[in-house]
Amino acid sequence: MRNEDQGISGDAQRLEQLGWMLFLKILDEKDQELELIRDGYRSVIPEKFQWRNWAADSEGITGDELLMFIDDARTGLFAMLRELKSTAAPQRAELVREVFDGVNNYMKSGYAVRKVINQLNKFDFNNSDDRHIFGTIYESILIELRDAGNKGEYYTPRAITRLMTQMTNPRLGEHVLDPAAGTGGFLSAAIDHIRDNEVHSLDDEATLQKSISGWEYKPVAFVLGLTNLILHGLDVPDWHYIDSLKVEYNSIGPRQQVDVILANPPFGAGIAEGVETNFPKSYRCRESADLFVILMIQLLKPGGRCAIVLPDGCITGDGYKERIREKLLTDCNLHTIVRLPQSTFHPATVSTNLLFFEKGTPTKEIWYYEHRLPEGQKSYSKTKAIQFDEFAPMMEWWDKREENEVAWRVKVGDLKKGFDLDLKNPHREAEVTEKTSHEIIKALDKSFTKSHALLEQIQSQLP
Picture 1: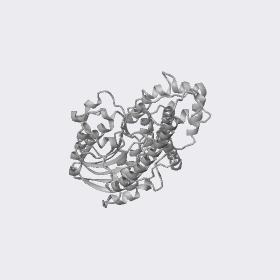
Picture 2 (picture 1 turned 60 degrees about the vertical axis):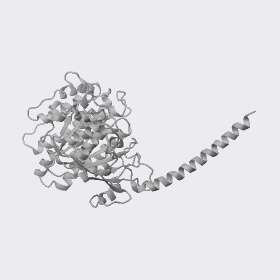
Picture 3 (picture 1 turned 180 degrees about the horizontal axis):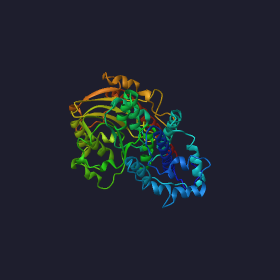
Picture 4 (picture 1 turned 180 degrees about the vertical axis):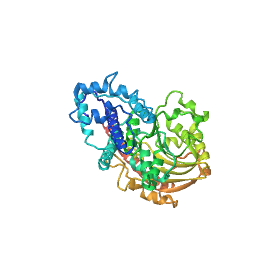
């Protein structure tokens, strides 16, 4: 698909194209599985458009005939699925409609489309080995999307999603939400965590199926995330194509609140005009990540737990930022901040933090933990990404909570004016100051030497 069709322009379109194909194939295989185990089950996809009937045969329709089948404005696949309805399974039909409302077929060669379809048909997603192999490929697709640059917000490193999930420890029966769900990385980690630890029966699995929710507003991420959750065994994912920041703030009450939130909200991203007016006046702003903090506090039940990724810019600053931090520290127990190296979200170079808090009691003290790069490594990169096993010392420290060279405790009363949370490791200050002074003196000496040499050169050329 990379070079064979001139209709595809850039990684975002390539992923969108692959996304709707994957969705239809995986949905059809799931439908065939459910047809075998559930009496009377029928797919919401009309028979003509079920993957098995138009795509599964490698010698099936191709060329212009295939393009017409997909693109015809009245009777084509996209036209029919954008209007799909089902009285028997309205939620499943709605998911299909939302997918095809948001994506497009960019490919202009039916022969190239057939080649991509035939490659996808090499995978049987009802086979656990094939599903595992494709899971690895799918992860590499998301990493490739991240490295494309402008779509990097879709991907949070798996080591981070797994750590945040394990430390928050969602339990069977608890409602888990990601209101900035991207491609579903946190929710798939939550599914794996709960299944591995607490699902022991069909009833347990049925409970899990109803307790995972995601909201996403970008079309490519929406279809990739939905596909990801279906791959993780959710029959009808509670997955919604909505702008979370437009969810009416004052309407969020006990029935809408959840037990656990795991998220990496977009930061530095534009928001729709007027969205900030949805929030209380003292917190209104145009920074998406700050608004998400307020939204998540509102979405949590009393006693609910949250783990989120935030850049340094959200844990410092005055004005509305100060008021948001004050609300966070007043309404919640912000018990842990994990400080990450600047290159963790490569290729982005933004200093980020993992914040862990519980709603219902004010913060009295905050534990900080500085995660350092592996010894001898100067930064994370495409080939040297952060690994989950690097967090082993922190996970061992988590329950003991003792100060050491990378962990320290701060009482809320000792925070600087404005509840500034951007605190450096006090155990490194002396070392950094001494080293920096030495480097400054050395650099100045070198600069003076160079300046004198240049001055002598200029003087020698004067008449």
